[in-house]
Length: 210
Image (cartoon, rainbow, N blue to C red; front, side, top):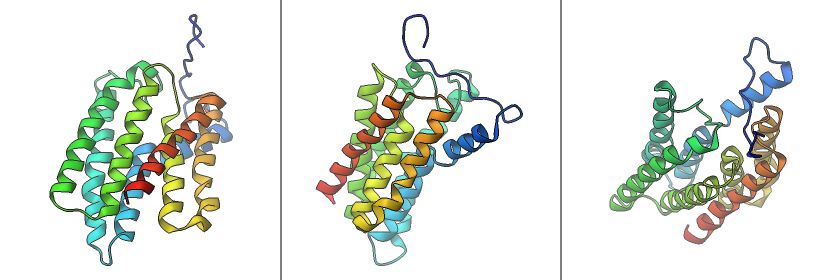
């Protein structure tokens, strides 16, 4: 907390001085970062939604606008000194990159509809768009965990696509991500839980549109 009572996460410890637990948390946070999960989910759903490998191509196209461009914008902001780090730990710095990511996702969605992409891929991108809008609305006033919002959505969407039997295994993703964010003191428990719950918005949209 700062002097005004607002939550300000500390800078994560450098690997050289971090404890084994903190190093493991950083590895989980980096590996299961939102962009990585978004790209992976789009490829999986793309492949699952078609009878051939064309689905992977559709997933790649969607991933370009939903994952690659957004993380590219963030890394550019870090390089220019406008953002603290690729996870954007300072809440007020998140609004502009998230808004720019919205434009990228909308562009990708228009292209997918224009090219008649598979229904599951289009439904997933719409779900991601709604999830991003919801996260942005919360972020304007409160530091919710975007990591867990994406991780929670991924777990629920995988269960919807492949069956409820997968949910206990998929749930390991938001659990691991939440643990890592708490260890690194990037979020409070409330922010982690709220982020995971927010992932349900994307899952609901996907379920309704697919």
